[in-house]
Image (cartoon, rainbow, N blue to C red):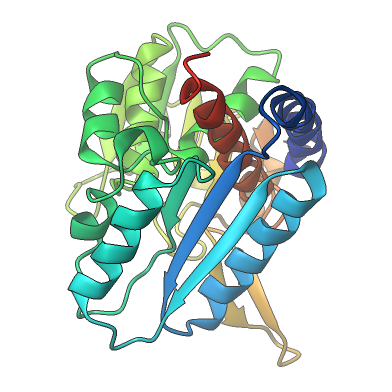
Length: 288
């Protein structure tokens, strides 16, 4: 069999249109646009590229976006002071720290300085705790986007066997929590897992976010499995061009039932749900 591609571009377009409608309504109601501040430290080319995409998407749907850029060697207390100011601003409803940060800065220190209600990446300790205790909070963008993709499929999640490969706070851990909330039986695989193939071979759903190109092969999965590839590693191909590749080998496309391509799968959903989280946060901060 050949897997059916899950078109993240198309589905994210639908999400963005819904968010745009809400953003326009917010502007008409409160005479200001929903506001997002993006804090970036250093000049990492990949981070800059991701930020440019976010800025472009914000402009397209009516979100006011501000880029706050620091040099690589900026002092922690200076960045904290700026975050504190953004927390107090009524025209800024969402704040994100573009990751990764330079080695001299601790990401958790800066993320936890953001007001939880403005933490539209969903990475503040309060939002992480809310997710894992089934309470209301802001859900991290990538897992939220993946769940949206899964819910477009003609496959019930309840009772299914799901494997999550990778245990980062951005993807792996919140993804496992969301799948548990959908009544999946979840197995979490990481770099210390032994004989992990025995779990993936039985899984109905596999979400792989390891950052290791071609880690998952056809013989690692069962026929017809749903495979969500979150991997995005920049490599130089045979022609000398720089390309992004996922965590799965091409053979998986001949055995899976549904699969996300790289690029064009999860990536557009992450940005779409950042926009969604920002507009939802704007409404909530107006007690709506």
